[in-house]
Length: 351
Image (cartoon, rainbow, N blue to C red):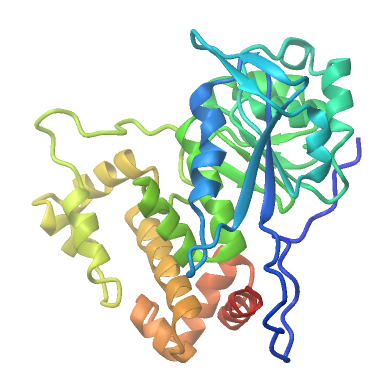
């Protein structure tokens, strides 16, 4: 099956130099349709509703509409001791700007043989070309069986990655990352990584400030990079074992300052070697990579919400020079700081 073309991030019209008439209707929110399959995990089914449903602009207007459909209207069994009732059938997929496929433990031939059932193939046929496709955990099996992931990077839960790669050799499986973003097709690892991916989509569509506010309302960390490791040795510190939490909090108050690894280690009374090892065990990335990610995040917020010149943004974010800022923003976001600012200013003006 041919992969869909990259869609526009949302149904927001291009900005105009002329002010919009006062009676111009509000642009329709970006429509997300979640496909609920038998054997679904209730937690993962709720992730798109929780994250996209909390995303709002500065005036409090919702930025997404979230609806759920099934292969047939009615009760859909879950992996728990209850079913969920879904009102809409697969025809709803034809109205989606983004389709999300959460995990299921009852994928049958999709998981066992890498092929779609007739009912699932008929449902996916409703999806319009250009629709953005998203999977959470084993939902990636559905996208792969439909051919959407051929030749593309993708991930799934680390415990299933080897099986996933054997079943779909045309897919470039990365078992280590939290999520992948290939433009119009995005995949995530299991459970919490689905939250990271949905926040990443909000950030991509509407900027860091709105994504951070969405995370704050949901009481989850605002940003974990997709390239961060899925599985780290110590997700939480062992009892009575020192962690690097204090050092990370110390850094966030000093992103605009020069930061040395020895200064971070000193906050935890550790040697540099021990601190570096412990940091990677807890965060899945090196201290330097983590600091750069936080500085890019800070730069995004300044570019979106302030009129500061690029040189000032570079200093405030801790990059020092405009050249260094451009290098890191281009590497992380694929655009220059000026282009990033122009894009989100235009989006805000259109809203």
